[in-house]
Length: 261
Image (cartoon, rainbow, N blue to C red):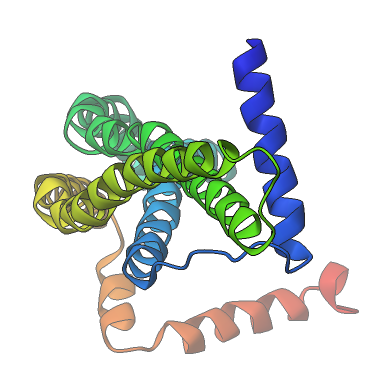
């Protein structure tokens, strides 16, 4: 950092301390504060959206991986019975295909149409926050020079050139602050308003991708259903499976080896 930059930072720190002590009057801009609150709300929501969007594909992979483990376990559990009627083997193939084809096919479109646009939008925040920081610096400089002028007016210095010099510094600081402040007050609302048309295509793509995954999953599970026993399907449709399960449990309890359960 240059000496000039170090001196500015020192002056700003001094001004902020004097503000807290009530020795320097702080300039308040309600219009900017309102837009800043709106921006912070949007920034927080966008960063959360980015985090959740990154986890969506991982969640799909985790779910299908879990389904695959369940399918392998069920296939081993049914053994020869499952091989004869084909139900466990059919379920395992459906889950394998869902993971190998559907999830992997959605990876590219999801990254291109959903994840990357959200990340590009969030990538602007560091630059915007830097502008907000610079605006605050300009405001602090202005308040500091304004306080200096006020002090010289109330208690004139022996050096008569100090007041005109301080007034010139205050006017320069005021102009620098107003330029930055006007830019922020004008452009922050524009940025906030642009969030909807920008994210609309990504939201539409997200819905379509989820629809495709759900449709593919339903289609593959529907193919497995044909291997299920017809009585089982009918009892499920009629809400009678609970009674059937209790009947089987009763038969198990009647076994001497399970009679104490």
